[in-house]
Picture 1 (cartoon, rainbow, N blue to C red):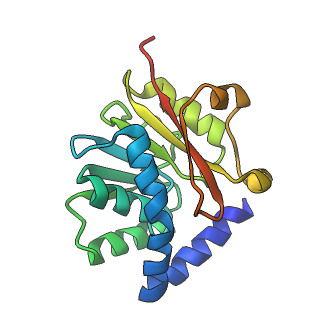
Picture 2 (tube, rainbow, N blue to C red):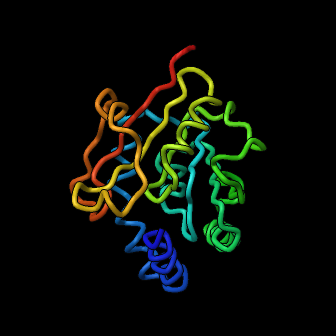
Picture 3 (spheres, rainbow, N blue to C red):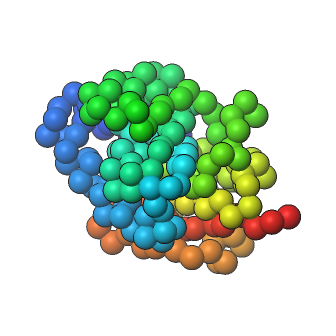
Length: 188
């Protein structure tokens, strides 16, 4: 999707310019705060962020806000290498791990995570979500970002029935992120 390329370009500029990095990080601050409250995330959680990009702002903020251990996966090796540089420069290598991995892969164990966060750009969202949901343990919290209504055609999405039954937090200050829904895996 072209939206992923566009986001990567912006994150690349942000990585190279401290001012843009701070501005982009500020953009995600309220979004992550809302998501932490929605899912009641604490330092005892083990968070997986699917789709970190070049600058894994959300993962960084999840770690800074909660103190939890965070793993970021992205299926673009170029993004992963640059994200590792960002994490290293910030001194977060002990608490934020970045891995080149696809969310549909069977080589990653999802069972160890208590929270799984899906970036807005994850694609195909329904396939990745379904794959992860089958593998996580009961009571795992899955946070899925949703685009603003007028941008929905630009992003991959989940089937509608799921959306109607989940708690949601709305992001008023985010330009492209409209809301985040919380799905909790039930025992089978």
